[in-house]
Amino acid sequence: MAKLIMTNIRMIDTDVGVSLRKGSNLEVEMDDVVMTRGRTLFEERDTPSLAQSLGLPEDTPAEEVVRVIRALQVIPNEQTSERIEALKGSSIWTYIERSANAATVIEGLFAVAAYAATIG
Image 1 (cartoon, rainbow, N blue to C red):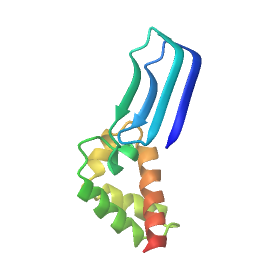
Image 2: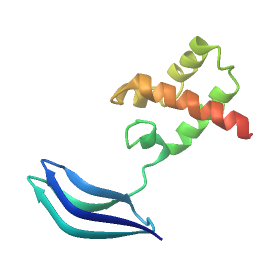
Image 3: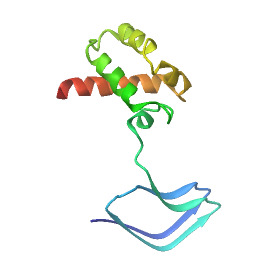
């Protein structure tokens, strides 16, 4: 088990001091830790879905993300405009448009599709 030791720490204007994925096998030891004007010292958070990790809205259907990644796998990486057109014609395009940063989402989808193509 890994161990996180925090000693003589001052957190000021911090939203969350320590954030760990739920189920992490980590022991946290704190001594002389002070948070000023903060909301949460320690939180366990749920692991984000694939859609969320790509920057898509939380309500994006997982099966649609998988479907579009499979569709992108068959379009060569060099054919960027064709890949973008495939996204625009997909069922998740409306979710991409609602994301905070569509360019980042598209890059992420392209990267996942490229990786998935290498592992079969």
